[in-house]
Image 1 (cartoon, one colour):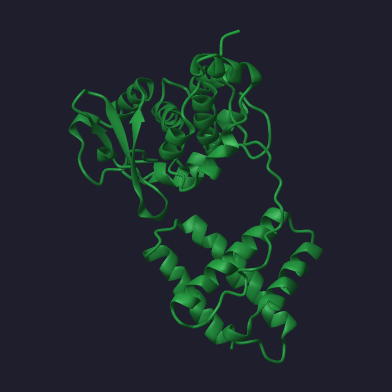
Image 2 (cartoon, rainbow, N blue to C red):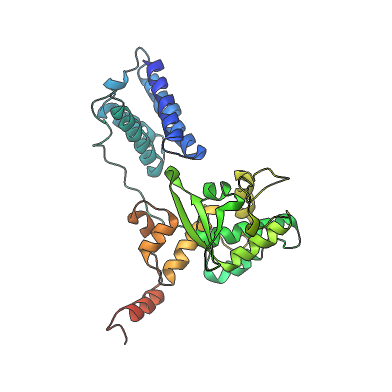
Amino acid sequence: MAKEFLAELQGFFLYLEKEKGYSKHTIASYKNDLEVQFFRFLTKNYPKEMPSIADIDRSVIRQFLGKEMEMQKSSRTVARRLASIKSFFKYLMVRGKVKNNPGSFIKTPKLPKPLPNYVDQFNIESLMEAPNGKTKKGLRDRAILELFYSTGIRLDELLRLNLDSIQKTYKNAHLVKVLGKGGKERLIPLGKTAKLSLDNYLKTRNLSIEKAMPNIPLFVSTGIKRIARRTVQQRITTYIQQVSAGSGIGPHTLRHTFATHLLDNGADIQAVKDLLGHSSLSTTQIYTHLKPETLKKIYVKAHPHGEN
């Protein structure tokens, strides 16, 4: 039974990679939830004979989630474990391996909704000036910071960018062509400041957006090698820590900052949703923590009877 379970898991992971287009980081989370944690639970609690996939029911999954809670795992972690199990069994249903999804009617643990960390507008200029503009690495890092803030893209999306991902419109504006989750493409306007920072960095490599060639990484570490995820995480986190306190700070903080500043200044939430590449408006709503004075300005501007 164990071999059957592991074989189906490998098929599921391949499906996530090839058909769903999930990043290695996301797939690694699924592997930890299913191949390490859930499989370990099954083998440990059913030492004589592990249940077949068809025999795994709601009670088995509830036992697993209960054990996780006993180990004082956070509600967010337990919720992710459940979501991974549901996705796996949904895949098995499509393949005809099971008739129903045993995780479907298990209630997801209630999650706390802390506001995402973001950099205050008063500190943005200080953040952008943190890298040393007299060095090649400093110019690269400033361009990365500006691009994150200008577009709100995810780390994985930035890492995949090539030189020809920056596209010029007929009005001499520039757009960034981004490959998002599930292989979905979207175009995001590129601000003039970010464009200037990119130009300054690319000059150090004798390259230009105006003469873009395919398959040339937009950001590199040394030579022509595409910059590593860990490098971006470490360097951007260091810069943000210089101007903003708090836990969970990293490249994603600039995505939160992008969305927060747009909404704080009256942007339409549907437009922000599309720019971020969210599939659901409810995901974007975590950024609607507008200050009272900002809400008042938007109200006065938008409502016919809004003036005092």
